[in-house]
Amino acid sequence: MNFTQSIRACFKKFADFKGVASRPEYWYFYLFTTIGNIIFGVAKLPALKIVWILALLLPSSAVATRRFRDAGHNPFWVIVIILSQFSSLALGNHGARRTSQAHASLAAGGLGLVVLLFAGLAITTIIFLCQKPKLTGNKYFPDRAETSINEASVSPQTGNYCSHCGKLKLPGQSECAGCGNTF
View 1: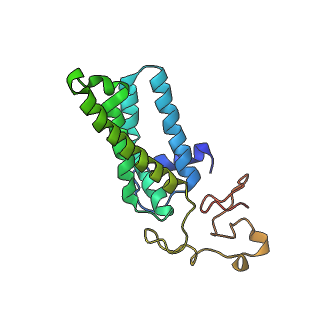
View 2: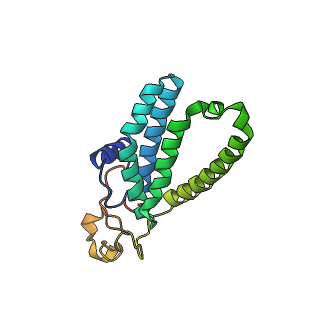
View 3: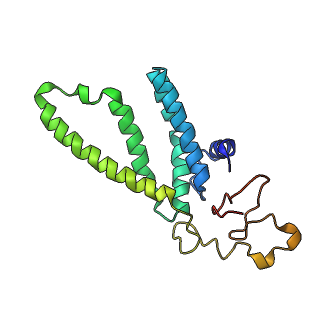
C-alpha cells in the first residue's frame, strides 16, 4: 500500500471502526495528517489548523482503532490519541503562558506530571501501532491464519497471492498490505 492508496482507503473507511488496518495504511495516513499540521502551523493559520485537526479526528480515530485491533491490542487505546489531539488544541503553542505568575510553580509541577503521563502513554501507543499484525490468538479480531490461503492451495499460475495470509499481490508491491510479509 502506497501513500495515495492509504489516504484513499482511510477516507473511504473514515467512520469504519471494524476490521483491521495494516501498518502502512496507518502510518501513511499519519504522515498525511502531520504534513497538514506542519503546513497550517508554518503558514500561521490557526483557524484552519483547528478545522484540519477536527476534520481528520474521525478518520484518524477509525484507522488507529483498526490498527490497534490488527496488532492484537484493545482498540480503546485510541482514547489516548484523541486526548492528545484535544490537549494540543486546548493548550496550543502558548499553553504555558496562559497561567498566572502566582500559580506558575504549582501549574508547572502539575503540568510536568501530565506531560510525563502523556509521554509514557504516547510511547506505549507508538510501540503498539508499530507492532506486526497478530494473526493467531488475537482476541480483538478473529484468527486469520486459519482462513488464509497457504502455499499448497495456491496453484503455480496464480502465484500473485501472499503465501502467509493469502492477500492479492498488486503490481509493484514488494510487501503484503495485509501482513507485511515480503514477496
